[in-house]
Length: 535
Image (cartoon, rainbow, N blue to C red; front, side):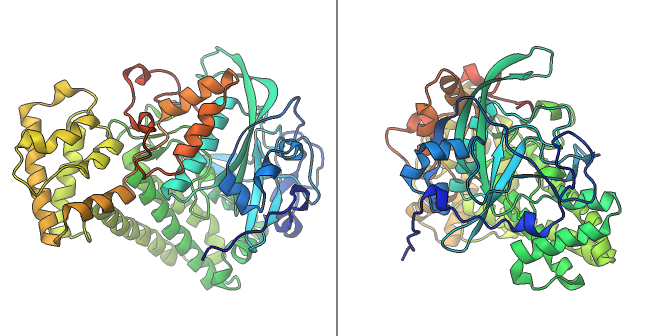
């Protein structure tokens, strides 16, 4: 039985700002860019905007906060979540953290364009931090303006919710609001700036604490603040571990390793690529955080990265995400080492991460293929050959796996008839040589034998596969179409995509156009393939 959450008036949201109440604050109250020492955060007010306008609201996230549909359509909602008015109990602040960016230590970073409004405790006792992205400068903005534009805000809002409904651990998004102001941006960092519509997203998560939150104190030798933040984090976000101690610090790190592995496996399962896996963009809760340049594999290419800044080194490419996650965890281990003062158990946890990821990845592949469980003796070769085949011609990953569930294996169809459903996954049909088709059909024969070994019927296989292989994902070209319309004042496609992405595993008759592979016009168009970090 589902427990119904009681809706409360917007003004009655219950704020319990434990973060600002229990952790050290920046003593400087002026909002100017600076190095912030011995502090976890700086209090700062959002910058009011000219004419806020609601573009979209995620009803499921509103319900988490005990808010009703009428609440979300109200003027007070728009004013509060654009930063124009503070609700009773809000205590706005920006967090201090550091991080490694593209493998290099960058020093202090912090919330340069994000302001936390406070922590809400809902009627079920769940804690959620509300954070505005694009609401103005903070002491951590460096040379930036702290604002965000509509195109990046649409992408973040939609992707947060798309990932949640795909079953991927993620931060959430409550609302997307136009600021009514223009923001100057250089999309490609090539000197061609232009004015774009400004926007603000309200992000929601139990915590926005990052690996870099601990790195900044460790890098400064500030073990007092390091311990204070770690103890707070364990008591607030990991209370099941018990009171902080040396043993509990290690259990805490082991759990972060495990949940991070689980998150990366889910990314791999749906073909998601996070283009900025810096340590300041890694959540200690194992949640996908900070949707900047990202994308879904269309052509199955393990070396693909969605980030133009990463185009040369491809550090954050699809096939390298697990290794980067382990590298980032190593940096977190270095940061919390003063709390444990033993390298061996931390190293063991990092080794366990690799083992956990491998085991979870194997079961994930078994699930994607509709198998009972992964059997290395047969499935190592089966999956390796499938990965090789997917790279031989330009093959859409999402469509391939979805259509594979439709391939009829237990009949005597000829090879052309049997592989016909997979034709929808190919971008360049001319690449389908006789040699390729022969190799594909040999693999289908082996796949058929493997399924027979498990005693799985065609209907069982199809049903299993359709539960883990989505039909609908937020392809970059779909997001760009929504952005194009929204910039012209038509927000209908943003809301339609939000609705379609709520049921990514369902067929949804009449919505098939959102499950089509990338059109040729989008192959190299800005916003439809690779993206920059420009907001």
